[in-house]
Amino acid sequence: MSGKGKQTQRLDKILSHMGVGTRSELKKMVKQGRIYVDGKVVKDSGIQVNPEINVIEVDGERIKYREMIYLMLHKPPGVVSATEDARDKTVLDLLRKEDRIFQPFPVGRLDKDTEGLLILTNDGPLAHELLSPRKHVPKTYEARVLGKVDAEDVKQFAAGLRLDDGYETMPAELALLGHEETDEGTVSLISLIIHEGKFHQVKRMFQAVGKRVLYLKRVAMGELKLASDLAIGSYRELTEEELNLLRNDNAAN
Image (cartoon, one colour):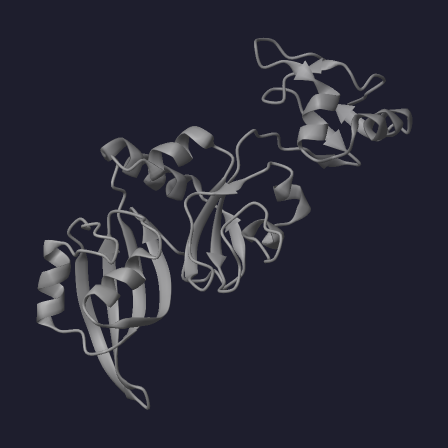
């Protein structure tokens, strides 16, 4: 029943990691004959198995073992990019129990009132690399900005801007998508690619040119784009292809 090699682990450790139950609960399940390995009923929850080789079933359902989790969330406004917060709802509160078991955390942050693409994972090394200042992984935003964005703004963003605290940003790619006339005045629809992640950076960049961000949405991180069919407030696991895009962004920088 045991698999060979270094990947062999206690069955109860594997199943508790997957959120099937506590070790005491798993002992009861074994006594009830509810756990099978390779088609045979398990008599001891502490047996050694290899989750990559042995077929583990609980109540007739196969358990797919994994250590890492990679989620794409369409973060809604009003939710904070944190693992816990005393006052506000966090992005972890949007996850199902079976995904929270893995203790994922947001890769970087989006402001509370900003929506859009947020990656959650428990892969610390990948998150660290994606957030490393020396990597300069590009982040793409779409925004509604109060004020008429023009060619002069595009040039200033391309040259880098001095923010309110004296920080000088890296060159950014600003594109005008259109204008709307509203009761407040002209609103510009823009796309912006930045290579840093300073606090309130997009808002402060527009403040530096005398304009105000009304609505902000992150639509891409590196080559990974927010799925168009992912409703606001919902999430799903990254596909293998999407995960490779993230890893390629990391390797390319």
